Length: 165
Image (cartoon, rainbow, N blue to C red; front, side, top):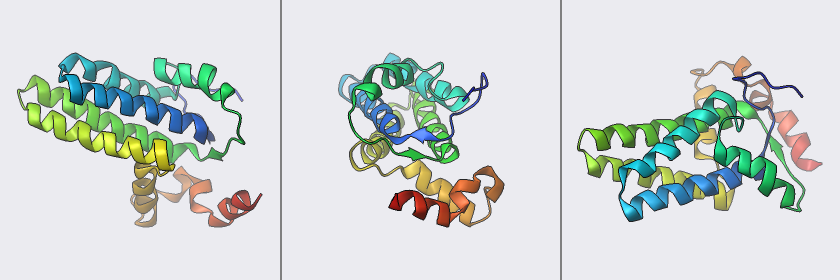
């Protein structure tokens, strides 16, 4: 499958998504422990790169998809791309917001935003629960995100068939 320069993969390997979440969690924890603003830069950049193009321009995404995921010997599950892209956008909002808050001297806001990001990343990495994907799904149900953005997300029967095989 050929990917456009700024395209996002669809479907997404959930193993890779969980490993990227683990990397984001480690970066968030490093910021919370060391409290150095510059640690927010690679975190926010990674989310920006993944929103724009999936793993293509993300060093963490490249490491995960090229090095780690091939070494994980399990049956890989593939999930819809649009909710994962939305989740990366939420991560960008939190990490970018933390960077801006730090620049404005609101360090406590930075710590709070990154703490929330760490919680969401932990849910994805450890429990395979994508909080951003859950919000995406809710927004689709409310009609805020049009159904045609993710036909696979909107078609429950396809997901049930995929889950049973």
